[in-house]
Length: 76
Image: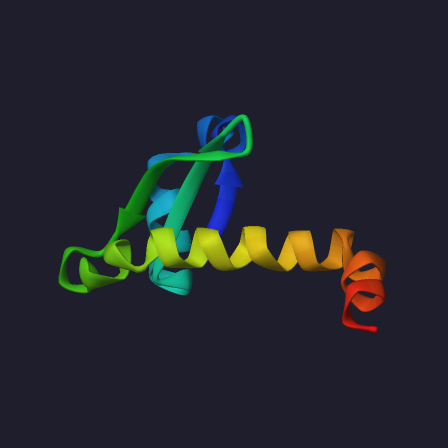
């Protein structure tokens, strides 16, 4: 799955976006860094159900990186 900004999606042709979906399984189009649209091959529609889980994982990773020193201090 690949995240792209809505500005990038607007600059690309529909064919380019479809090719990106074919290469990556799905494309999440972000608006203001928030998921707005998910494009997926119909046969792979189950991947859309996993999008929320992936977003939570990404946010969790970002928080861990940002607050790693605090977590290490709390672990003492």
